[in-house]
Amino acid sequence: QVQVVESGGGLVQAGGSLRLSCATSGSGFSISAMGWYRQVPGKQRELVAGISRFGQPVYVDSVKGRFTISSDNAKNPVYLQMNSLKTEDTAVYYCNVDVRELSGKETHYWGQGTQVTVSS
Image (cartoon, rainbow, N blue to C red):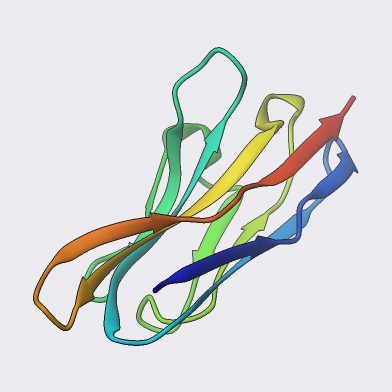
């Protein structure tokens, strides 16, 4: 069983910074990629930033230059450094982990989400 736990959300003023962390625990799997998504009520969940073991980090255009995803080859843990936050960054942020199980099955797991609120 794979557990994914996010931390680091909170309330911050516009222009401020937050760092989110995502830790994965369990056994019998290897991590292929990790990513941060966000969702606001009434909208679809969107990819904010992602990182894989062999590729370059990817970002949604709206956060390029402000957010940085980091890890050691997409291994535990993965961080999302969020700078110059804007009110439109307010959302619940979710960590998604793509794994390959010992059986060869590829699947993914979600964390419970962490609220990020940016005030004006």
